[in-house]
Length: 228
Image (cartoon, rainbow, N blue to C red; front, top):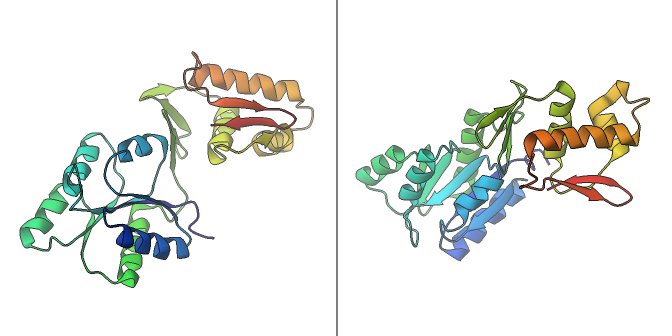
């Protein structure tokens, strides 16, 4: 489906509302991950790159706007729609000042929520091709063809950039050497043997994870490699 690469995070402590929102978003083809509190959400953001967050204000532990303010200070610029029963003008102002991009009061109509989600995704560019891919410590900037590892710029050759981009598009999926040759080397793949593919992967590994602390590359017996 058109939206399957767009991931939306929902933080909502009322399970029935969470399930309702998940149902409507999934029906539109979005990938959806739900949380009943802010616990574990930041860890999730370190490993995934969601396109949008729907956040309830009344949450156990850290209040919704406090959490959004916290992740904004940590450098996350994910668009946020607040869903809340707090409908006073001061609440609205507080939500936007905390870093919210839109605000819906409960009860809300699912159709209106879907329209607001689509509008915000369009404004943020997520409905177009993703320009940055983030995974663990890696951020790949596609227009600039640049990579940062844990905030530090790392220089890659054109081949290495394309190789890493391919792996990051297929997280956790075993990729054969033939597939990598077609995707990365393309028209120049003739004459690129299995050993050349292995050497390219090892060079890339040494640049992005020299101490093998993240253990990104996993050989898959009889197939090729998996990036995880």
